[in-house]
Image 1 (cartoon, rainbow over the protein chains, first blue to last red):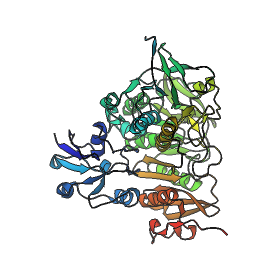
Image 2: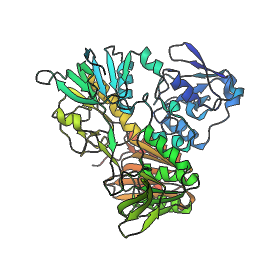
Image 3: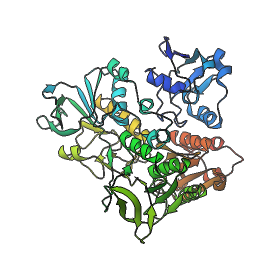
Image 4: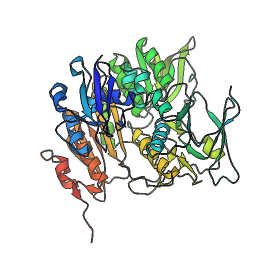
Length: 107
Length: 424
């Protein structure tokens, strides 16, 4: 079972189990990771599940599609290179130990 | 059956999107008073929007719809009472303190010193001959959606009564499952309460193109069945449409009974101000059950049936309960998934006097911006996320997108966001 590593805003690290096919947003919400709001429930409409994917994992998660790109561009407070919407990242075996940092604010 | 009085600091009636958000917001703000959420449904609190989308398609189970895992509520000292409907509420003394005791149908009594009503709404029911036949279903709760999902697999012909969002999303799922689908709508256009005629017409043709039969201006007079099971829907013109499953989506009715019992003002919903205060300022209400001033203009009264409103208003209500009131200024937003069409709405278009179409609706990727007195009101965006986000951003900033250039697809809307002109 792949694991996802969340670096939370208080500086702590949470390593949780994830199902293949599940979104990283869903993994966060079901594990009570603070700072992932996910108002729209994974619909790419609210941009409140913004995360920073670590440099090491960046190549493996691929690139945002147009819709996500637009939300990241206009919907998040501090966009950086690793910015993604967690609802649009699917867990795969290859993504084991995917590490994402939670931003201090969601929009 | 449970009896006896258990102490509760804050009581939230309704374990739904608004209720859960209110509880979470209180805890996030550091409030440590006892907190009880009472919900009538026999399920752990879950999200409704996927019920007419991914859940109905069979892509998701109910577990995946939970707002938070059970452990989250336990860890945050939030007591969830499921499968209990609050039947009556008595306020202490003159009611000004907002404290009192609620009693559920089973006789459980919960005392509180702060009260929030997130009681939601019930589906409007058909009152026609045959309305109680088997396989005449509604679509609001998880149990409703399970029924529709179960019946869908064994059905050939599906009739959807009501051409609003719920009905059209259900029609899209049924059609994608290869069913013969007819949508019957009493008004002369689809989704009439939420979108403009242009967007209504787009959805009519989009469904027609995918093989759905749409009957507008069509009333239903009766449902016919054999052996207790529905077989046909009869329209006012006498037409009988074969059906082995009927999905009814004709709107919701806010649950105002408890508010009325408490003497709170109600007008098609529990009346609240921009701080989510009811007419008894010690009691707050949030979500589908409320009517409130238009959050963008402060005028009139609107009832917003959406996740965004439930979340935004619940946060406002939590702040009010904590004595740190902040007005509701969030820009309304909404989405609907039908087939591969994603509709995203930002703002409220009611009362517009000008619309600007951006892109070509026949390409199934376009948006419509709405204005009143040259002031930007809203956008309906179909497969046009950038337009949706640009308008949402402009409205959030109190800015505008000049109408004269908004239809120019060679320029991104985000580059047209401008401060509102100052009138002298």
